[in-house]
Length: 201
Image 1 (cartoon, helix red, strand yellow):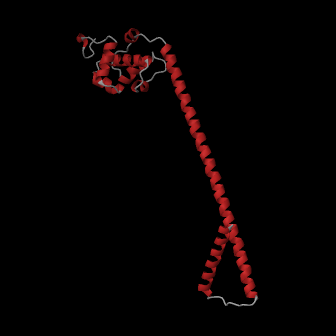
Image 2 (cartoon, rainbow, N blue to C red; image 1 turned 135 degrees about the vertical axis):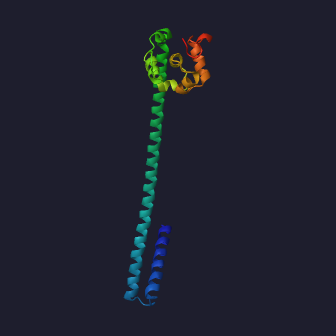
Image 3 (spheres, rainbow, N blue to C red; image 1 turned 30 degrees about the vertical axis):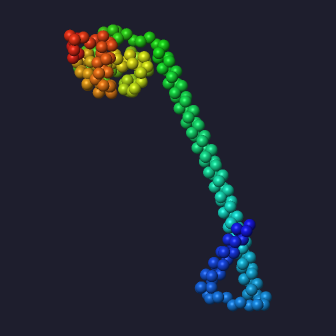
């Protein structure tokens, strides 16, 4: 309340100073003249207006505090929802990987026996091999995931591409792997021998 009164008085004095500069200093009367009564009434109105302004400002600050608190609650709720969603995605991914681990691995011999011949692009050949692996696409092969099911699919694709007379560097660039990794995959599938170096069958 003291702060409100002081603010109202300061505003009243500022208005009086502006009024004095514009129209001159008002004459001081010692008696209770109508002019003095008007000044008193004007001062009381300004004091009341000042109190209302201060009270309105206090209400605005309270509203601002409530708004900030509500925004913080909403932000925390969004973060918790996002954290829960990510946890669900991770659990679903782990469940899918566990199911894949239980599946029998497709036979490389069967895949190799049915490989297409002729002028086939690397993407088409990789898609043909991956048709034997459920739920795996080319983007999965290019990631750094190392599940047994996914690694076997990557080895099969690398071996099939190498057998199509592509060298290790080209296959490695296609699968986002080093050429030594492709060499390891080819040897793991049993298609590399010194006699067929370079993809010759």
